[in-house]
Image 1 (cartoon, one colour):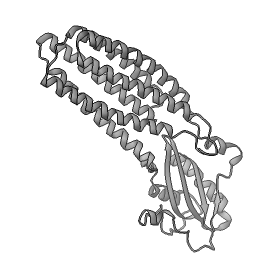
Image 2: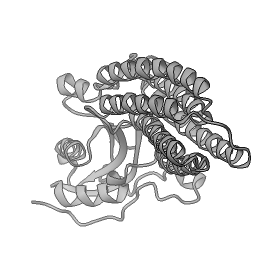
Image 3: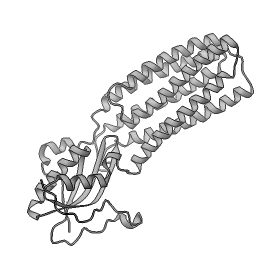
Length: 333
């Protein structure tokens, strides 16, 4: 049997390193709430302005801002619930809620883009009368509001997938406001109405591109994928090269609970059984320093065991290698 070893220095530092409550959530929560208030308030202004100016572009952009406001509310809820402590049923707490919120936001971006393309087609086939200069004024105000919100959202930590999703929403709306300004100027000076739907399609394509990237990232996390910079092959090679007294690494599994919360489990074999405790400490330190893995569970394979037990995932994944590495010669400093 393998003996499992968790962080030897569990008394103090381990509890801090393994905290599952995000440290950045409070700052994110505040900026998301402020952005929500700004977006929701101006959404009402833009819709009223769109009705007054007879501009479908402004009303459609107001609809986009409504989805932005919903995305911000969902992001706020994700950060709020994400700070709750783990319990017996949810041992990692609600950290992953933000990943689900991010995926939902990405899906709504797809729907927004499809709606914009549909509206653009409608305007090309049946142009509407537009009052360009009221449209221009409201669109400029929308641009300013979106710039302010984008500035707020890009302060501090931005790698969080939930924050990325919100930023994509705001950038899509920013492009929509910019397109509405250009359309208003062109219509006002030349009367050429098709510029409005043409620019709308361009904005929709950019939104689709950003949404696809976000879906790929959040899906990778939900599928328990390893971060690009912490693949099992990279971890194995690094440990065998830099940890003295380590002879074998196997059964490596790496995944993320949410952005910045990477976990790993693995088996190690020390050159001498008496070195096992020191090797485990060195491996955990290397995982933290090189790969930012703050929570690792390490099983020790003892010298009287011929090999590690077969990985339970191997059959389910059609001989998935489970991070296996062949027996390697001892590396020492």
